[in-house]
Length: 270
Image 1 (cartoon, rainbow, N blue to C red):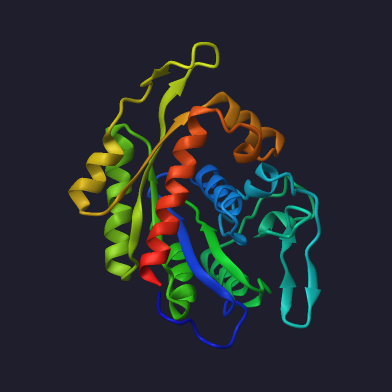
Image 2 (cartoon, helix red, strand yellow):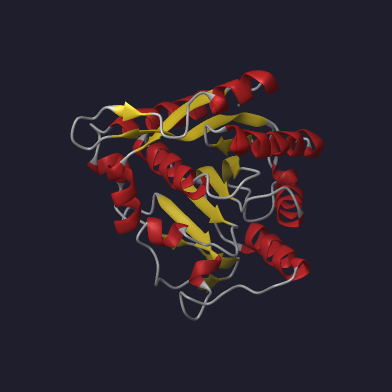
């Protein structure tokens, strides 16, 4: 990856990855958190920037909700998820007075906050910054990509579910990446089958293979499938570290394989 600008709060960030999808409900936040945890498990220092302003779910997924954001000379200090300070997080969820408050903002105010998140959070030195985005291809996405462009993002991880309706919507996200000049690191097929907690057999509830076909059609890498796993759902609900606690689950191998491919791509692009 090209060298980032010398000044600014992102100067110490080596690789920036955006997690995108043209459709809501495909599990972008789940994939963002699990990629971050898997990269941390691999010994990397990771930050997560949650720009899903209307649905900031990552603080809860990482058991960081209720924590406060503080100021320093260079801007906001992100919330550290673990005692080792190897995962840091910034989200509008930390700025709301009450967790049930709705963000009822027009586009310009949302775009201004995204630019502030990009420019005013003091991330320090990071190996990876994972940017979790809302669904769609409109104002907030354009603002995010434009704000990050000077720092040469590594690219986008595009998330879909297997069924044709989802794949059709996500195909538009790949078109968005092309129009914005944003490289695509690869496609992830989430909710790819249901893993029975008793017999561990995987049933293809939503069909299978849509993500791989989409990647092949677009000429971009296919990073892998992540099944519906009750242990993963439980971890997200309770704010547990799934990668650390359930290494024998079927979703574990899928997520760590995706993270390894991201690491390999980062090494090749350096």
